[in-house]
Image (cartoon, rainbow over all chains, first blue to last red; front, side):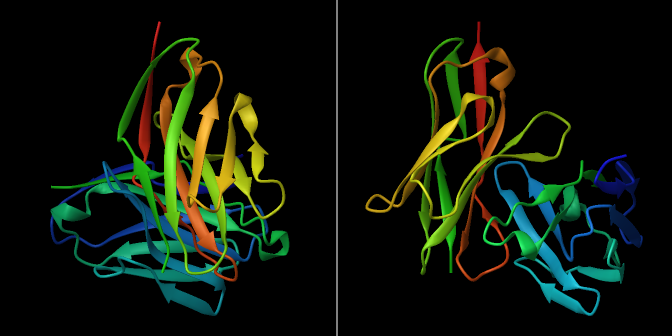
Length: 115
Length: 113
């Protein structure tokens, strides 16, 4: 099994629908992140969480929300999906105990298309 | 605030040629720097990292990068390209004391026979 698992791998949804992307990890890491990748724009940080009670907005949080259900689970929601949220979404984890390495472990990504 | 600039969205080389992917950074405090690689339909994999030890850093698959503070650069090199190196490469920075990575826009490496 992968260390960081994202579900679904691919999803097509309609404008205005609510959708949840899920991420679970077996690394035992406290820190989890959601990024989106767009061609030519690289990866941009949406939200991050340093423990179950900690949630922080990233660079592009508008239109998104997150839930940290447990140390191992971090979900990203689009409350009302719009076409410009079509992107590849990545979940990542890191372990502050490895500081200053900050080695992120990435999931395989969720490709979301909003039509 | 920190930022990363990757020069060239696409770089083409012939198999066996030198690979040079450029990365310049901006950081208000001394940074940690990273290179990640993304193969088609996969997540990102860490190639190498600079965390204030040696300025010349060696990574996986024969890649290396040199931290040059005076030039605010962290360019990625490989002496001889292989077809399997074709992928997208991302440079990333985090200032010391911070906790999130800021990525560049990526450089697609194309390797021709």
